[in-house]
Image (cartoon, rainbow, N blue to C red):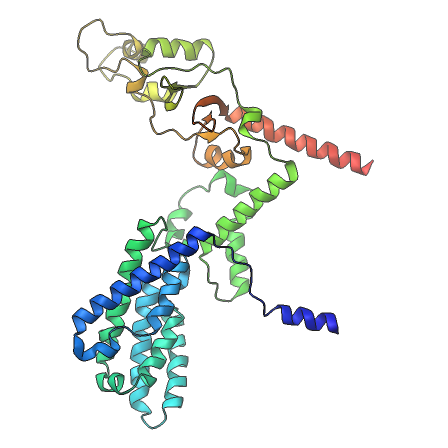
Length: 398
């Protein structure tokens, strides 16, 4: 009995805070920026006559959602604008219908506001406070009547959303956060990513959410991303951490920006390599050239055969001036995705499986090139780790 009582009381304790220090500072700064700018602009537009109502209290609760959890479905632009407007409209209506019973009017306003937000898909918790403010806001709100819906509710809501749009995107947080349902029709016409064909699928998650049947204060795609990261973390725990340094090819042929195309092509054919990294004198990766780069930039003049076209493209021009590329630096892919030598190889799986990368240069802590990981290296490493796990299980059984 004592243990059950302690367990029940423990439920009232606060949950661990998963937000880092920077994220907490970002959210606090955003609330300061949003509320200050919204209040100042509203005050200047509404004038001194409405000074007591230029910024309504529910905007403080809206700021918590917009700047602390901008990915939440409850914090999206339609949620705050639509939710606040419909709640204010309902609150004013019930305040006029039940002038002598404000408590009943407030309760009914809150009830019908929630129902309307569910119907219009604009659920926003602070909007419930907007409905109560329209009923219990005092003489100024009662005198304003339906004008309260536009000024200050609509004005506050729009201004706060605009500040959230600017601040969140300026500080690296995507806002508004496009939900999965808005992209579902597009995704249905495309083949799923290779990594999505194993483990749980999007359909599995949708089915569980439908069965769960409750409001979640987290976006569906964020929830899916958390599950995927959890799977990767569990994989690292089960198989150990194999890093890029453990499997990368170290004796790698590299090119310079000025390497002639003909020389680069002969090296690739001679060593049966499909791509070569391009380095500067400090051995930092400035690009990568692959067979597809050669084919994409070949000359399109009217030669008799494709072979002749290609030979003409890679051969050095004997004239002083030419519009044809002469060096690998002119055809290489410049924006190259690299990995650190300490990066776990499991993090390369989405890059190679979903993004179509076949070769990933590896750099050290000084950002200098130290090797390269290919799809073959990755497959071999994952295969070996799987065999090692099976051997361990067999030994335990025996």
